[in-house]
Image (cartoon, rainbow over all chains, first blue to last red; front, side):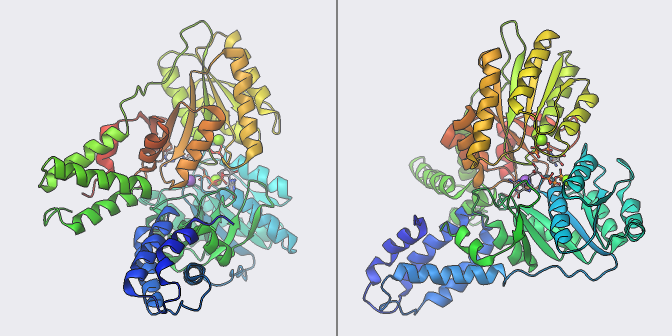
Length: 295
Length: 279
Ligand SMILES: Nc1nc2c(ncn2[C@@H]2O[C@H](COP(=O)(O)OP(=O)(O)OP(=O)(O)O)[C@@H](O)[C@H]2O)c(=O)[nH]1
Ligand SMILES: Nc1nc2c(ncn2[C@@H]2O[C@H](COP(=O)(O)OP(=O)(O)OP(=O)(O)O)[C@@H](O)[C@H]2O)c(=O)[nH]1
Ligand SMILES: [K+]
Ligand SMILES: [Mg+2]
Ligand SMILES: [Mg+2]
């Protein structure tokens, strides 16, 4: 297995082989490589600082003499730390409302409308009766896109208008769901910038109107350093309970996962791994840790 | 940042500013090394001096290539092919481009060669309506190369000035989809000769993956320029510094919103200033 970080750490740790505990200088050299690897993976630089400090405490004095391969031992410590930071095994959805409500929010093009279809498919396979609700009245043909997704997965869709205010649509969808025998409502919303106060207010109003059991923040795995500001702004401006990390079928290292989890404390619940409605799975912190480290 | 002179801390701060603008680790370390050497050699001792050097360095990294969009100098219509990973803003950028061109009295045809994503052709159709451009589309699932082919035929027949071909978003690590894009381009070239532009649309929020994107699309379809979208957010789009340094791909356009007029030519000076609003 090609593993750039391990080989760099081997160089940094070469001197300690057979010498006992890690000394401060070796730990420094090791942490430097780890810092660069995390930055290259797009983990936010402030988040990297925190992780590196925690690792320093853990590594100083660590017994590596008996380890056959000190680099592997350090890599293991690092990936354990990342796994911990990424949260425990994936938290499911807590859907108790009648109907239960899921709302999706995020930046433009992050994968919300696709995720709406995927969630509907997943829930349908578990015996639920989902209804997709078209509250993106902004992007050209967004409503049509959601309708097509609903048709693809065979679920109800509520899409009474293609322009105007999405808040009433959201509000009325609850009664519509009951009328049509649907027990879970999935609200698609327009993409919006976290710095756009008006549209952030609109998302908050939609949330207020439907009181979701789960508000999920959808974020593109390819996002860079701004992930922290974006996530924090959505948490403060709209609020959310969990995260969907999208486009993980790409080759981005996905450091955003760490950034988002660190600054919001909200669990990453799903990984979106393709354009088809079945390309969706529970999020696995252990796999993500390896991926961020390039392993 | 250099409030207390050119200290180690100040250099670290500079490094952080570049990294947090998504300029990338490798490029940042090289740029800062270079800057340290130059400020030593050139005897720069003030903070303003270093910042000026840095801006110059970044400005140089962005090159001084021609950033105008290519146009056909022969009979047939100009052809621009628009590519990129999923959700970056291809279709929207095409809509904005069509608006500019139609306003300048050039007749535009849009070809909806994204036959994959739900309602992609409808989305492009709305932009065609908004701008007065003509639309060529087929049913969902149709061969994208055949849509491109018919787009060119239609543009040629009605003696349009410009054909813009929209393509489905695709991740650059997907071999089959990249091959499909190659085929779209080959089919167009067979009819039209070399294309005037093959644009890669990059989202300004993208991190280090932007370099892999650019490299893969360059290899697959010989990209000629970049449109950097969503610069109206808080991301600085610093990844294009690395892209231009490593691959020599010029940024030609920037997207500044979702509305029809939110498109501008790339201005390297403005861009570099934007990278360091906080300095
Ligand atoms: N490869 C891949 N593509 C995805 C994934 N999720 C979404 N996409 C694609 O990304 C693009 C944008 O997805 P949408 O679902 O339209 O995103 P959105 O957040 O609803 O976009 P807006 O409504 O415009 O803000 C589309 O081309 C999708 O097919 C994924 O997990 N992997
Ligand atoms: N804020 C902002 N949003 C933009 C910009 N350009 C595009 N968008 C939005 O980003 C989302 C995706 O844009 P599209 O044009 O559909 O992207 P695409 O690359 O064609 O997407 P796919 O075809 O699904 O791969 C839409 O919600 C657009 O309105 C921009 O410059 N700024
Ligand atoms: K994006
Ligand atoms: Mg959408
Ligand atoms: Mg598109």
